[in-house]
Each structure stands twice: as C-alpha cells, then as structure tokens.
Length: 298
Image 1 (cartoon, rainbow, N blue to C red):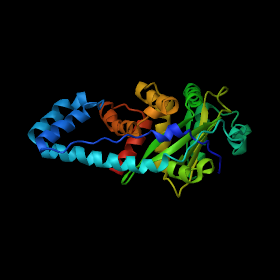
Image 2: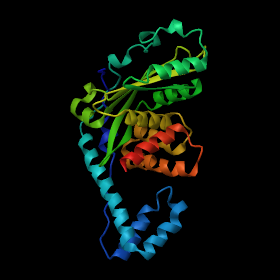
Image 3: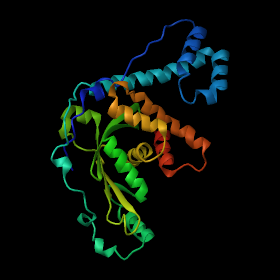
Image 4: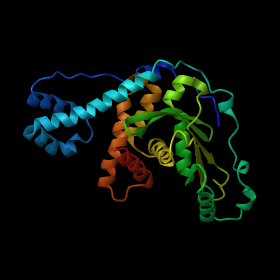
C-alpha cells in the first residue's frame, strides 16, 4: 500500500550525528582515554569495577573491544549521512495521509464478533492472522490512548533495525489510527512518495464495548521478515506507551530539538534491552521479542 510520507524538516536529519576522535598513544594511555569516553554510558556505574579491572590488567584487550564498537558506530554514522541532506520542511500531512480512519469492517464481518467476549475476539483475531504476511496483537484501551496521544505529540521518529553488519534506520510517521514505516534509504530516494515496508493499523471497533483494540501490521516480505516486523512494532510500543524518561526524552529531542538528536542514543537503548532482560526475569514480551532480534544479529 503506497502512501505519501511527510517531508522532514532539514534540521531533523541534518544534525543527527557528530563525529568524535581520539588521540592515539600507548595502549595503557589509550585505554585510559577510552575508559573516560565510556563513563557517560548509563550502565557504566553498574559495571565500573569489571571495566576498570580489564582496563588496568589487559589494556590491549580493553582497547580492542572499545575500538571494535567504535568502528561499528562510525560505520553507522557514515551510512546515516546518506540520509541527512534530502529532507526539507513540509507544513502539513498530504491529503492521502489525512484519509479517514481504517475500519475493521473493511477486512472482517464485524457483526459476527459483536456477541463474542473479549478473549474470544482476541483468539479469533490472532488465529485469523496466523498464516498471513502480517503481525497482529491487541492493546488495552489505556495503552492505545497513550500510543495515540504520544503519536500526536511526536508524529515522526526513527527506529533502528539490527542487520548483519550494523543497523538500518526506519522512518516512522503517525496518521490517525495508522502508523507508516519506510527505510530512510527509501525516503532519501523517493521522499514523500517512499514505499512502505510496514503499515500498522489499530481498530477501535470494540474499544468501548469489549475493552480491546485490535492491531495488525502488514509488511513487505521482500524488505523485512516477520521477526523484524515484530521488533519494530515492539520498539514502537517501548517508546510510545511505556513510562521511561530516557526514551521519552529521545522522542522529544527528535521532534522538538533535532539539532541535539543523536542516533547512537537509539542504538544504546536497543542494546541495553539485553541488560534489562537479564536483570528482570518477568520482563515483558515486547522486550523479549526485541532481544531475540538483537541476539540473532550478533
């Protein structure tokens, strides 16, 4: 399904990334400099003792590990630069993006579900999509309301998708009860006419009567796998529906202070999910599914 994406303001993509350089010295001195550079990481305090011990006892290994990570980050920055000069301001959504809300009756016979309970509707919905090229799920009304409220405040965002040799960034745009996604590379080439890699639609037909919102995401199987589609959907919920000050600040920065936005903040959040799940045995399915994608990449 083709849609018209909004043109992004030049500031949103022009100032995403800043390069940093380190002075090469002896391994010990280099390790000390690198140690100083990672102290801003939010997880440094937790692992400070182990990190410091490695830096002191085996500076060569410490330097090799940090430099390997920096090399990957540099590659990601260089790839991201391809996207930053092709966006200019567009004052409002295109006419196509402002179309009426998608209706459940467009894809199912709603009358056959009206006498069903919440759990039965949920089971029917999930089973209906099992053998289709899409993902599906349900949201509690208060979660959906939070998603849409934040979508109105922060209608555009990017999400990192782990790939074999780094990360691909996916542009996200909200429109009514729909969420449209396209790779930034496609946006660079086609701008607002970029084809979508996934469209997520939320159906509110039973929001009031059954206390449930139905969700499905149709994706381009030539572009992303079902696991990658789920990873994007789950990241979206982590940013737009959970009470996490760090992720909320990243959303605000991208939309309100694009000159301060750093794409590595997104990658750090994605990579930190593994640490989170190790410390929380009862972590959510959203976090677990994103972790599986990270592990697959590694």
